[in-house]
Length: 503
Image (tube, rainbow, N blue to C red):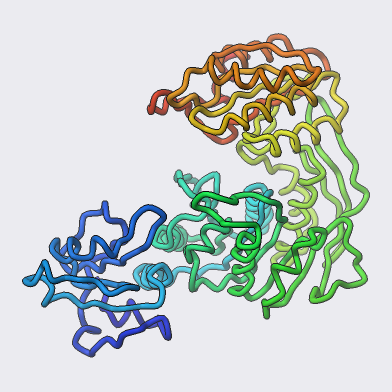
């Protein structure tokens, strides 16, 4: 239980109505924002406006079920519940999503105040960079938690999440769990949608990071246009103490133009002589692709806070940018270059060009690439390593755009030597119908192809028919450990399938 005074202490000018002294002493039993959640006696119900519902429409029902306090943006009519209405406190605020974030922080005793908070935003590379930062910081003796796309990591436990940045109440709850587990650092992917919906409102990040920006998440219930997408990303840099940005990306100026935080940069192309608004640039040079016993990687030098070199055991020049970002961040916590190099070499992120070592003679990787742009980027990266054959195994999700199927089929046929078309999450469609659509695109390219509808059989085929020097990509599933068929999720982890095949 917490008093209304404790819960609203940091509201400031968010309040549009005064709360009298008697109400400030009121004890709150729980905070509820989801209309599907059971409401306890003396709960505070926060009326959130969603894409397809408005919590204000459920205000009366919440009061009838025992809510003692309502937080609203709009006026609500409680006339249908005269008995309950007289005992409820209605508090009007400018924005109930912001109110929920502040209420949640207070409910969990402001856990962000007890953590070093590092937030990352950008279109690509956030998950990998999070794990690189975690690896280095833990090598330097810190204990880190992660909130991000792959899940919530607290100590040795991993919790599933359905959003890159969960709702603000959950964000605060996870941070409280981290504090209770002895974590001293939070590393968090902060999505544009999360920023748009104020899920981290009130959190002042110690470090905010910009990785890169490209057109994504435009349309539907996400962002109306690219300008809104850029603006929402930039909100992170208005609530931080230090900004660390990719100065090779031209959109970096959009991120920091209204920020008063100190700015540092990282890059490969960036001129170290100084960029406007940037106090310092960490630079990578001498990039060299490596390939040893089937393991693809890349080696590079870095020079900024202090000089060093590192080798990654995952492929891709873009991963140098991720690593350089991690080095820039972690340079504020350690200057031990051995800790940095050891940590970066050991980093493998589940489902992000994740190598599965089963042979010295060919390379096998799992990646989440599930659209044409992502698949093209991954295949381009792998082609740089000059494999004897580039083999691409993928399917497409059911009940999704057919254009994705045509585009991915064409990309794979043009860039891979062999395409193995199989199933992904067919959902409510027949796998053979999805495959037929993919083949329309495949037939536009010159590559050889084979269709194997059962994904387990398809994985067995590429392993048993691998040739010396091959690079095999299993695309689409990434960190997922299930296959969705007719509304049911069946357990299916590609790593387990591979282990069963090789025996």
